Length: 217
Ligand code: SF4
Image 1 (tube, rainbow, N blue to C red):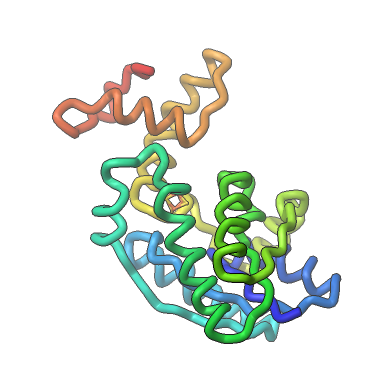
Image 2 (tube, helix red, strand yellow):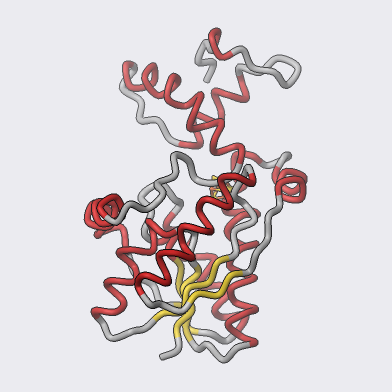
């Protein structure tokens, strides 16, 4: 098997590389993440992965692409569904194209490791592209190793990001902490989707006053 592992960051790759190698599968990591903003954050995650790949002696392909304006233009009218409608397909398609052009017969992604991602959507999009490109999709529920992978990433001193990647996820993460406290008091689990909805509903002329979020749902 010649496997390409689309890789979002070093911490998420730790458990994936470990379990694949335990199955005698040697992955090639593939970095293509123009969804990560701002540039300082993009650079921190990319460089951390480059160093980690060297340390683990795993092959890494870097498609260096930073895309703040292009990304924003493409998601601004669909913030609630931006992950599955734009971000996942954008990154996976590039990985499939690379795999096809370079003789990889199998593909998967570290996004299947994150407990914060839309796991089923990721699998669905991957499966559909696998069919389209004639490449096998290796499904794994890497989330089962979430705690183990996080602990190992911290112990290895890897850069641990505080939000998913795009500026909108940074907004959800920052404002979301305040909104989440209030939602929990009401017995509602905070999710990116309901936090996003509250942020949008609290905007006036596109602007939000963080001290006056009223949790309009
Ligand atoms: S939240 Fe994460 S997966 Fe969703 S659009 Fe932003 S960077 Fe992409």
